[in-house]
Amino acid sequence: MPTQTPESLQKFAIQDHLTFHVGNGNLNHDLVEARIVTPASEATILLHGAHLTRWNPTGTEPVIYVSPKSAFAEDKPIRGGIPVLYPWFASGWDGQHQPMHGFARITEWTVQSTHLDPHGDVTLTLTLPSTPDLQKSGYGQCAATLRFRVGKELAITLEVTNHGSAPIVFEEGLHTYFAIGDIRQTTTEGLQGTTYLDKRDNFAKKVQTERLLHYTRDVDQVHLNTATPLTVHDAANRRDIHIVKGGSDTTVTWNPWSVMTPTLPDLAPDSWEHFVCVETVNAADNRITLAPGQTHVMSSTVHVTKLA
Image (tube, rainbow, N blue to C red; front, side, top):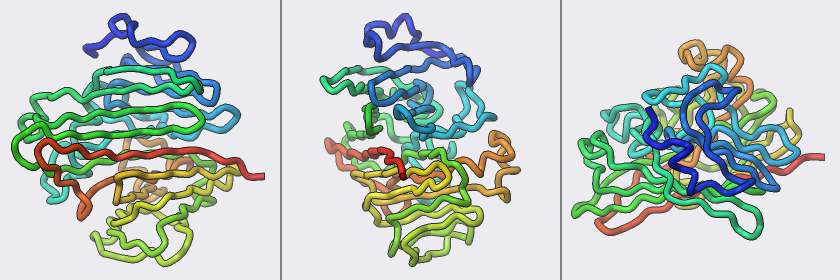
């Protein structure tokens, strides 16, 4: 069972703006979630995995996709939303790390603070407890803090500090599932000229030569040494989704298409048509080595513009 309850978290609530609840009528779970309401948008963040499952700017279609078949359980990751990947991406830079994508997305994070600023934006700050699993894997002396700022923009900051006496190596990611009208009418801009590892072709190194990345089949690409802003052109919904990264040198984009979806039981048969993952990451050649006493900060800021 969750160790934090809505009652114990009442001191962090903000009247009319931030409340804590167990479960959600639409998603039918018994996990604790924070519900945020601002003049510009609304959001839902589960303490399990520090997992954002909803961000809806006022007057727009939902920006974040969650699979209708996702499990909402303490020992399972959520399919969709924004999973937090740490302290490794996938099975790690050496392919030997488990569980997949690390412990952060299946651990209950602790509420550290909340804040309402004069502009109406709400900030929720969570910390990752030093669990036995993290200690056993060598990350017990690291402090991970995740900060969500919800308003006209969705800004997420992951901060890792090494309190140990030796350097640590880790990977990290915000595995964002963007909701789109139709993947076949979606492109991503900002990756031209980058080298990527094509996971669908035995990790072959390739170069993105075109200005727009088109989705015409299953895609799983790890773009290295890229820090530029990105735009997801969601033509079916007549909008652009803009992503500005900080402290991130890797961008991952993924869609399972109809080919891979049947292998993923927590996706609906048509889920692949309605999302694209464009992820803020540090992985593979861009993994982080953090000296004792040092802090690394990675951030992702998202906003939406409507097209005429």
